[in-house]
Every structure is written in structure tokens, then in C-alpha cells.
Image 1 (cartoon, helix red, strand yellow):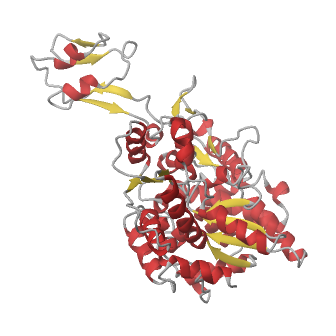
Image 2 (cartoon, rainbow, N blue to C red):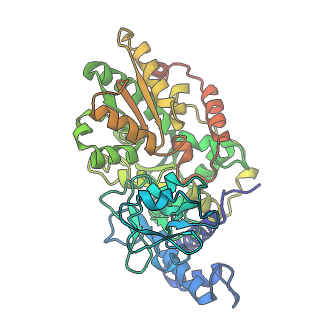
Image 3 (cartoon, one colour):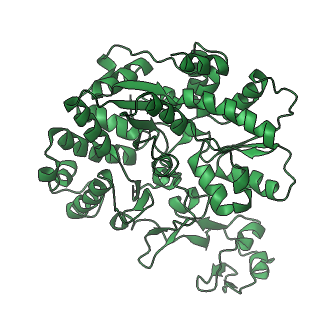
Length: 476
């Protein structure tokens, strides 16, 4: 069974695996020059014009696998040399143009960018076109289409444009690090930085110092990933890597659900704080609503904080589907609790870099969280958990009107209504990725079936009430 959705993901994984393999061995510096040749051997190119260009691009991927450009604070980076195959884009007249008499396209264009030739066919002057799209809307044959680059199409916050060399350019002032462009780029020219070397160093240090423990906090989305193995085998594989213990981020979600239920009933209106990309979006695009963002830390940071309270010497590694988490853990309020973040793609690379075949392993059990904490992984799950939190806290007199937002476009609509005071709701559940965390860029696989797996994982929880899971944690 395939481990990844796309071949681009597989290429990224191969680079990560080689970097990790040499890092475990302590020979990474000596082998840096060899990795591109390992990934692209021989003299025949497989993806580009020549083998030398392929190797040069792999060399850039290696840099990202080792943490990327330090001067660039964004976790998302463009590999300029790899970004040269996409069309310029913009509105174009296709062969579907029938040369009709109406010429609505010409009439509607306020810039005079459309002309009609001797055969009555429309043409667009790119120098005059401002890409308003009015011509496309009025064409009765749908003959005018907008050729957007996949990365631009994927970026719903309009943070991507083209630089003077026609390569993708990211506006960090707009970017929310959701990673949608990373997943959608068909050339793998946009990547997220990896902190996989941090994890390896922590584990190696823990093996030399018995007082040094590395904890893995796993996102509930893990139940929908690694489809070729059982969840218990994946968890056992994490232990085999050298992690001291595994804790569910869903247990942090349980704590957050109760806290947000209380905060919501006190304030009357709230937006969630669980998705770092959504929080970033609110702060950048809707600053007037910043005061309404929940003051609770995310489930990741909440449970990490608890781990460090119990074990101040611990190192905490979050493993999940989210590239934006790689920005979150650097924030002042989160940095004391979370030491680094990796995605499921990177976890797969770690397994294979140590030749850990998880399908051969016995199963490791994990049962910390409630049903409600686990369903945070999919859209509407947070809203359901807050509703349950209100009920369990005896706050049922409060009329919850949740507005679950499935993807950043839905978030935009809800936030716009909130700014105009016309939103029919008092709690905005903001999820930047479509489907929720199960649609994260760092997932191995995506799709509707992931939601079903998360719901099944939730039903397997031994705690059917949030308070039971939190009480069990407090009584440990």
C-alpha cells in the first residue's frame, strides 16, 4: 500500500530519510555532498532537463531538511531553482470562443484590454489586463479562463505572487504557514523547513543521559495516517525511535475544551485558539477581532506544559499534520513547553532511516484522552467538545451557537460577518485546512475517509466524558 498521496511527498521523504540516516550515524557533514547523488544517481534525468539541475534542487531540499535558511523566519520557503515550470497564468481566451455578436467581454472590460479580431474572436492584452475576471463571468461560452498557478490557487490568503524571475514569492506579512501551497505545488518547489535533526539530537542525548527524557506528543490525526499499519504499531515505532513516553495531544484538547467552554460563557463571544494558522489569520487580516481569540493555549502547548510541570527536564516533541505548528512552537508563550515539531511525513522518514518496519512490531497502547478530545482532529469536533464542556461544567443555561469553519475561506466569511456584527453565532471554530487537522499539509494521506477513522478512534476512547479524562490526568 502506498505511504503517500503524491510523488512529490515521496521525493521530500527520501531526502529527509537520507539526512536522518546520516544524522543517526553522526556522519551527516561528511555526506552532505553525496545525498543529491543518492537521490538522483546516474546520468539520465527523471524529472528535469538534466541530472545536474535535479541534483542542485535536491541540494536545496537537503538545506530545508536541515532547518532551512536561518534568516528567513517563515517556516515555508520557495526553492527558486525548482520553480520554473508553471505557466505565467492570468486570464486567457480559449478555443471555445465562438466569435459571437454580443461581445459582452469587450463591453464589460473597463481597461480596454479586450479586442476583437477580423474573425470576431476575442484577445486579451496582458499589459492592460488587471485580472478583475469580469470578462470571464459574462462570457456565455465560458471561453475565458483564469490560469492560476497551483500555489496561488491553493493560497486562500493571497500571500503568493511572482518575483522578477517568475518564481513564486511568499509575502510573509500575509502568510499563515498553513502549508496548502506546499501540498499543492506539483513540482515540490515550495517546502516547509524540517526540524528533524533536533529530534535526532534530543534522542541521542537521552540515550547518553538517563535523566534526560524525550516525550512525544502525538496529534489525534495520527489515527487516520500510516494506513498500511495499525495505530498501535505506529506508536510502538515511536517508542523504538527512542522516545521515553507518548502522550495524546487530545488530552490537551480535553483540557482546552473545558477551559474554552468556561471562557465563552464568561465573555459571550469567542474564536478558537487551537489552529495556529487560523489564529495568525485573525491577527493579520482581522486585527479588531484579536481580543476575542481564546486566551487558552492550543492542545499541543497545553499538554506539553503539563508534561514539563511533572518533569522539568523533559524535552517535548510534537508530532502532527501541521506546518503552522512549526511557527507556533517558537512563540514566546509556547516555546517554554514545546521543544520542536515534526510532521507525519518526517516521522515516516525517521522510521525508515532506522530501518524500523512498523508492520512487524507489536502494538503499543495509548488511552489518555476522551472521545471529544480525539475528534478535535476534524472539522466540527472542537464545537462538539465545547458543547460537551458547557454541559459537563453545568453551564447549560448558556445558548451555544457554534460556527464551525471548514477551511480558511469559510473562516473569512465568518470573521467578516463577525466584524459587521451580523454573525449568527457566538463561537467561531476556526480550522485553516479543509476538513480540519486531517487536511493538514504534513499528512501522509488526505481524504474523506480520514474523518471516519478519527470518529472511530474517538469511539475507542475509554473516557466518554471530558471531565473523566481530565480527572484521570490530575489523579495520576
